[in-house]
Image 1 (cartoon, rainbow, N blue to C red):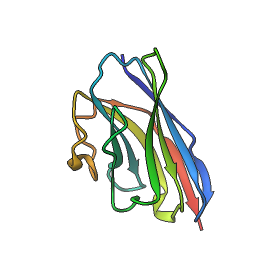
Image 2: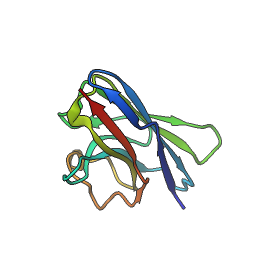
Image 3: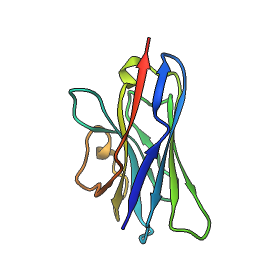
Amino acid sequence: QVQLMESGGGSAKEGESLKLSCSVSGLSISWYCLGWFRQAQGKERAGIAIIEEDGTDAKYSDSVKGRFTISIDRAANTNTVTLGLEMRSLRPEDDGRYYCALAPEYTCWASYIGEASEDFKFWGQGTQVTVST
């Protein structure tokens, strides 16, 4: 069973940086899309960064492009990968709960940005990011 667990959330001031990590374990498939989603208070959960399982073809929402970087680190000889999200130049609008998710046997479609597609079958519990001015 695939399991995802986020870490690294917390508080930051505007302009500062934070890094999120997501441990993905129990992988028994070789083709999937991984993504980071954000849910601000009172808003729908939406994809902000996605990446193919081989670390290619990263896509970002306009709101984070140029400031956030998604990455994959694969541990050798294991069924575990670490999904990262480096967040720089944080803004108050980046405030929210961040989730990592996996879409099994799907290409990372551009349409995944800005929504929470049902193709993502496995989700972490989320980690809170608070950005103050």
